[in-house]
Amino acid sequence: MAREEETKVKLLGLWVSPFVRRVEWALKLKGVSYDYIEEDILNKSPLLLELNPVHKTVPVMVHDGKVICESFVLLEYIDETWKHHPLLPHDPYDRAIARFWACFVEEKILENAWIAMCSEGEEKEKATKIAIDAVERIEELLKGKQFFGGDDIGYLDLAVGWVSHWLPVWDEVGSTKILDPLRFPSTTSWATNFLGHPLIRDNLPPKDKMLDYFHQKKGRIMASRARV
Ligand SMILES: N[C@@H](CCC(=O)N[C@@H](CS)C(=O)NCC(=O)O)C(=O)O
Image 1 (cartoon, rainbow, N blue to C red):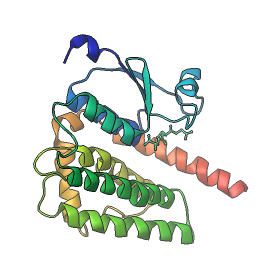
Image 2 (image 1 turned 135 degrees about the horizontal axis):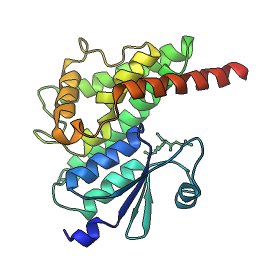
Image 3 (image 1 turned 90 degrees about the horizontal axis):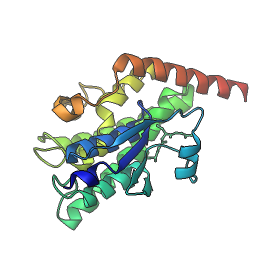
Image 4 (image 1 turned 120 degrees about the vertical axis):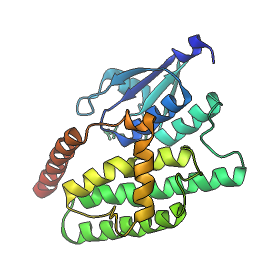
């Protein structure tokens, strides 16, 4: 890979975002250097609004002047652009299956764990159940495996990686137990393997800062709901 090419990547991010972090992990696994620009999500910069006028969210990556948004799209773009250390499996069927589970975890676990953290009563119970049922599926997939794809980190590990570090924090903030180590030993041991990988270990937001951030975020969400 040309050194020149490496320096042409810019990433707009937010330190605590699981979506941004999965993209950073992919860039780091590929050995692509990039300029990181921290975004203030409560006061979005003109640059973010210009680069991602559709969703106005991070991550946004600029490569060679081309703008790419959405973390899953970015994982695939990175994998196709820097071909060494492939993230997605080679076989088309295996690729389809990896994408299927990435979407499943995003829709069923991430969205519902977030709702469970930021709600009460029936809504919380319902979201918690959907998320736990989904972790059960992941538990089956991970039985006897170190990582989703075998013995090295790949696309699905990066896509689902937030489960290892963010989900325990959300469980703590929301007083839920979605990632229960007794109920889900294979997922818990995958999380330990994932977090133990040197590249991941050194690229995680600090837990105490995350706890503060999500406690505050939850407080703001609950307060705004109470006003409605
Ligand atoms: N589906 C998007 C989600 C990105 C996203 O929601 N990012 C959050 C940061 S964690 C954001 O920018 N939020 C700003 C907003 O929603 O206004 C992805 O995978 O990239």
